[in-house]
Image 1: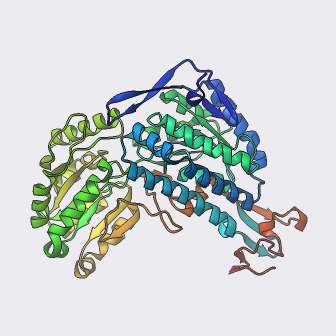
Image 2: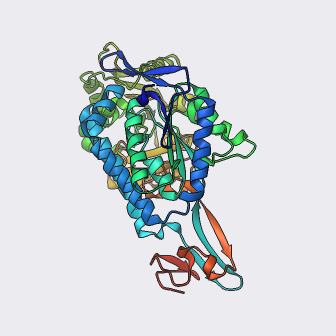
Image 3: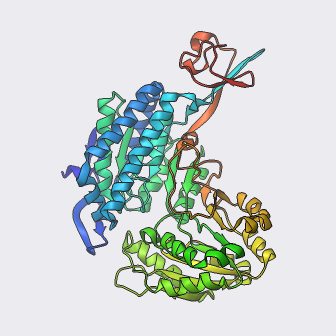
Length: 515
């Protein structure tokens, strides 16, 4: 039995399945030799059962010990060194420098949550000491099934933001590795399991499952002991999991980030002032990572033709290089998406030269009326393309904004006068996106306490949350109320003496005081 290609069910390696699959090197255009076994129904069941048993213990582990666990994962991931980034590069085609940065982002997320746990006030303790005596705090949901993303083999994968947030909340995790980078996933999973063992976490706090088939993910989503699902990927994949989870005898929440076109509105004054500079910045954002970011600016709107700005884009895109996409399937979907836009009436505004097995950046164009008549033209095409919409006047601009689906981001570029004259646009976009930017570009999502990476349907489900930043912990919690409890039965966070020294809402006022 080759241990690398097997499931990691707690501390046990399991290789029951007979079906195998291989990762693919998109740069070299060759299948990688290591086979990986598809998880069987029995292995999926054992992983969830073990996670459920571990949850009864892990949910009681003090926050300081969970913080030490997350710190140990970060340290172990760093220790993997060149082997990790070289493996991830071979499986994704991403450059080493990008993956080194992504590794640092991954460990940074883990340490962010460790710090949140150490401080302790995240539990949102609330005490109303009256009659009745009512006390509230957040508690973990339970066993969480997490699905890795294709475009971030580290930061949105095995030890990525979803896993960090779920483990920080006190949930146990069964992770479904993305089939595009199974060896990378295995390496990081071993770092997590080593951290669990060295910090005394219960066996089953984390398990890794492999599978290239849709059936593997669906089987995990249907397991009766699963309490939540987290997913980053396509609308089709996220919607399938959402439908499965809501049709179960006991429905469970699905926290799915499913993509976005991230519209960018360029207002007239700023286009006159700095149209050429904005065009260069826009193309850099559009083609970064071969457009394989969920915050890629796939739609931009200008008043009228956009004059110098659009002219510069047309001339400049021809000099942009084609790039290697993550998988042949993603490249095929991108090329089909471009063809479908053209068939639906979009005009090619400009494009980069073609290259074998690579994605060429594209700019396409439609009128405001075309967009309003056929909203499907404004759906995401994952890759380095963007669709230009010409708005004839301010009313067109507002109509286009109101007609948008839910987005991860929405951006406005304007002078101070532009922004004053289009103040209503901010109000419209606030209802459409989780993050609104002024005079910036959406690619690049900071990992901090204030970040929101989410938005209304179909960008995410549900809209009331984020998959990046410390607030992501609240997706994996629920509030519980303790009424008229004797002191010895209360958790430390809710006891009168406040032994943890955290901020609490005491009778309507935030305080660290004892009651």
